[in-house]
Amino acid sequence: MLLSLPFYALVLYVLSKKKNKLAISKSIYAWAIAMGILGYYLSSLFDFVGLQYISAGIERIILFIYPTLAILINRWIFKVAITKRQWFSILITYIGIGIAYWGEMQYFENTQLFLYGSIMVLLCGITYAFYLVGTGKLVPKMGVSSYTSVAMLSATVGIFTHYLIAEDIKLFPHYLALGSPILVYIIALALIATVIPSFLLSSGMKRIGSNDLAIVTSIGPVATLFQARVLLHEHIGTLQIIGTILVILGVIMVKKKEPLK
Image 1 (cartoon, rainbow, N blue to C red):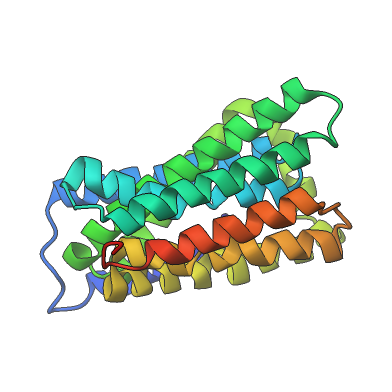
Image 2: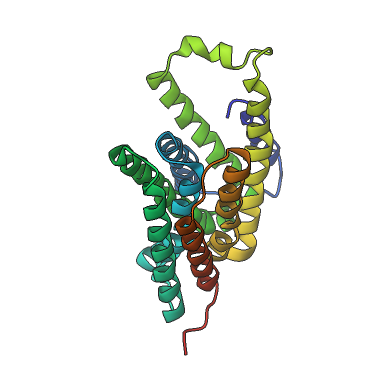
């Protein structure tokens, strides 16, 4: 976040100099700050805590719920109707998650820690779903670049505040030492996995809306599931494969707007 911060600050500075910039109220800025803390600070925190106790494969399967959660949140808060097909797809998605989850649980001796990690990842999915819905409402009012920069800068403040409270600040220079092998990964995470995707996500949200974007981004959990097998050599059993297929089927069906015949 430290390495990505200058990019967001520069974008905000350039936007502030534009003569035809959007008039944005303080309340909209406040909501953007809240979304940044929710979607990129709390959501990431829950995810990383959970990954200490469950595999990356099952973490991705649990996170598959956020497309359906985004639809449920839109229904709950903004009264957006849910078709019979979408209800059916949500049911299929959760059955698939249950099957894959049960299959994964068999490989863990400490089920209590496994359940704790699962709850943390579930909270990640819930907070990220709220972020997607909120982003869909705020991007049209702020613009892609302005919203993304404000949200990410506020998330950075949240992350460093947490770090100052929870970690040993004396170790911080060690992580950024030029000789550290971690530095390469940090730079890649800052640019390839943070700055670029954050602007692409907001730009896509403006064009297709939160529900459709949630469906499209579900390719992430699928890709991670198989990368976890290839790169991290994590086990993928029959139940995980069956559950994943059901989840993918359910997520695809959510995209359909017409009701079941």
